[in-house]
Length: 193
Image (cartoon, rainbow, N blue to C red; front, side):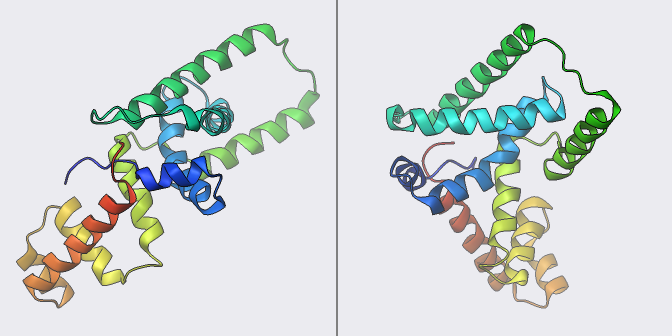
């Protein structure tokens, strides 16, 4: 499967402040941004940085211009993430430690546990995280059998004939279902990542 990219139409929707576009962008990119931040930061710090990255993207998306090279958006977003991680550490140096006792410590511990549950770090590549996130979003848009056909062939590496036997489909139907999901992924992420 080719490396997915970010849809230029999604980026245009974000530029126009369309709620649906922003919601889709946040759903798809939160796990990727979080995983990149988590390589250098705690769970709670990473969750904070994710929010800062989205604020920066919101303020700078109008200046982003695809340069025609592959992964232009990925490079641009990586730069923002890197800067926000550095900014976070710089802010921490300037901030004195908080005072709050055991109640405050317990509250922050519970918050950290919630963040861990919301964003687990799997060690997967950005492309794999994007595809897995999209597959979850596609659950309401396509049949379970179509998703399984794709997952079994594209992710698990089974042949169309093996999947056909297991799912009670023809090999041609398996290939068609798998291609349908590939097309949806490519349409969703076309152009940037």
